[in-house]
Length: 238
Ligand SMILES: N[C@@H](CCC(=O)N[C@@H](CS)C(=O)NCC(=O)O)C(=O)O
Image (cartoon, rainbow, N blue to C red; front, side, top):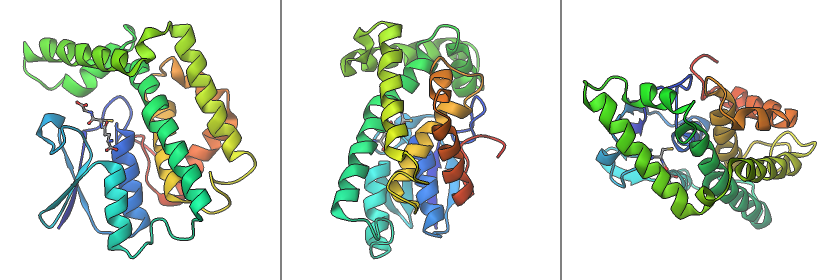
């Protein structure tokens, strides 16, 4: 029995975490049977974050470590056909989207006073009062702290928008006229990139990041192409 643990649906997203979505994409791509279990409190996860996976009692936590595990388990099917240069470009892109753009997406949801109520309702709305009031504020403080430690929190909103636009431009220019990041064939790095873009385009309502990303029609089409190809969507209704 293979079980993937992810967050419950929230603010228009069936799979609210890009790390969870990319894991789901990889499992689907490899035709691996799995069931999904929702976890509301990531502190219960082995590394305090989602996703993690249970393969018949063998626990694998972290989406990139899961990719390595799946690649080994399938005799190299996940990274199959990629040159070392393509793999290097893919890893570099993953770092850009997951260690930089991801945090701007988090800030656009959690740190914007007008958007935070959607986080609060989506993630904590089922809690009993007074936890429903207290826990979101505590969690938000933790996000503020992490964002400041990352360094992005030192910048004005306009400067953060500038960073976001340059990240998105870089993804846009990497795709160029190709169907996918690395060429005409889908690769594991498209799961990582499209999962983040789905989180930017499909959270409802738009955050401040969404219209910046929509300045790049290539990215809108690309995110759809990857999700359509796999039949795995970040949003609630495909
Ligand atoms: N490096 C991890 C990152 C996972 C991650 O950051 N997950 C977030 C959700 S998008 C999480 O569980 N956050 C909960 C927390 O930090 O308390 C991976 O690739 O799986």
